[in-house]
Image (cartoon, rainbow, N blue to C red; front, side):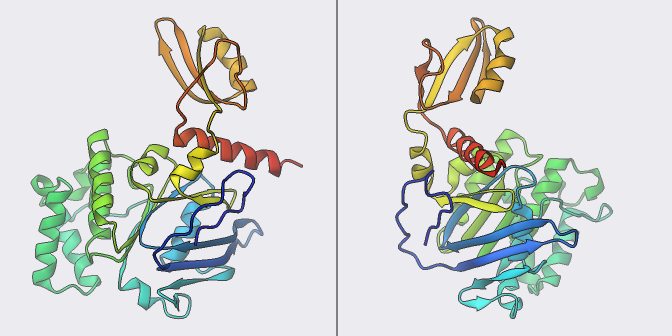
Length: 313
């Protein structure tokens, strides 16, 4: 079921019809320094695409490492199809695809050699692996460079190899951490389309700070900040929180710094007439401001602002 720890921000969402594949209950993670990376995260996730949104340092990668069985929570449980992964991690690892934020490669290996090695590690038979690798290299536009050493690859090409390794075993749970970093706009669209195609009976968790990636494909959205879950809902419900609160107007460039301090600005565009500002506010910030169609980024920034206000002493 959907959960929300900031009910004053969001309307009550409708529970999904599908049963949860992944159940995260009361998960917290405390580091040796005493700092908390996560605090009491609970999510019930059915098949589909979850967009995990949050600023850098919000705790997204910490949560993903726990879900990928690389770290253990200080408290709380994670269950995959009813089986607790802390006690039986292999039940999840067999059906898991994971793309970490920093993909390590072997610079002297080609993409084909690298993927063949990882396919063997994952237990794929050679014939199936060869067919799957060819499919993924073509899908990710890497066929022409497949036999070149990866040490000469661009950052975007290395990221695509990382995406390929996460998909090798046709996973039931696919976890991707900032997957579009380093990809050009065409590659980003291609990857988003790929994730959409993979959804269905699978669960895909897409962690990012790029709101447009989530807006394009996610069936559910979870917003985290400072290790806390601010909201878990649909994009439609999140958008409803900023209905009638988004405004646009044009100002001289010299006025922008003062307005940035005064209002929650979600966009700026330089034009011949000046700078077109986009702001989230309960009422028109200035008489010349006109209502604008709300976007997911407006709602996301408002949720973060509300959280920061609550956190102030």
